[in-house]
Image (cartoon, rainbow, N blue to C red; front, side, top):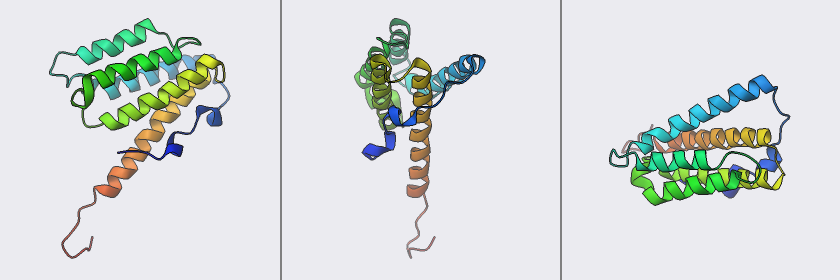
Length: 152
């Protein structure tokens, strides 16, 4: 499944005001849990070894989500995902790779100072939600059963 180029608009167009600090802390944890739960099914699919999961975890620990290292983090994750391939990523491999590329753009915006860390986190949530919304909508459109007479 591919998305049109405008599907993941630049994070610059989606800046929002930072949330209060207590919310930021909880939102970051919720986003991290969401991301991990999204990636775990694929990570357990690399022949049960967990090699891809270990590689992605190393990216998270080696490159913090901060100005100067954000794009390195997402480059590392993208490289880990492409190294182990679609068999390790599972059924949503194309979607995950598109999210990786959109995340890399957000990381570059954080590194360059176009986005603050908090704005970057907001953009990452937006990218992920948008991708899954589009994927869900597309699967509903293509998943409708067809009858031989063309009626639904």
